[in-house]
Amino acid sequence: MDAAQRQLVILRHAKSAWPDGVPDRQRPLNGRGHRDAEAAGWWIRDHVGRLDAVVCSPAERTRQTLTIVAAELDDPPDPTFDDDVYGAPPAALLEVVRRLPDATSTALLIGHNPGVQELVEILTGQECEMRTSSVAVVEWTGSWTDAAAEAAVVRQHATPRGEPQS
Image (cartoon, rainbow, N blue to C red; front, side, top):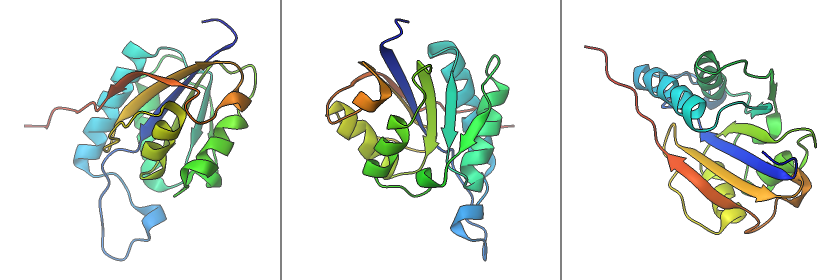
């Protein structure tokens, strides 16, 4: 990939549980979420390849999604857990993207809706439904600071699903 080509992989966390009395930030993945996160890891490995950086919301469900996804990747980078990603509106997520290091060509951002879906739409001008475990791969030429409205194109969009255990 050319040094000026940027690839942002946007992943919505996998399906979470809603246990009674558990604060939103501490909600874990449910069984389907575990299976779907694994499928998302396979999808990223097979369709994206090597990641240079990972930025993840510190919420439990995004951390668990990352752990499962990373187990399917070849040599994943150490993640950065950024409070600015938790429950963030798209403008805040755009600022997170703009702070990525110049040496990074491909980055993974793991967050929440509606922010991640709106981020894809802002960057590309295209609507992509970001269900749990959905992945959107957006690309543009330039630096991370060039991330702006309709600066990118959607290269790939998928919602990987794992197989239920019998």
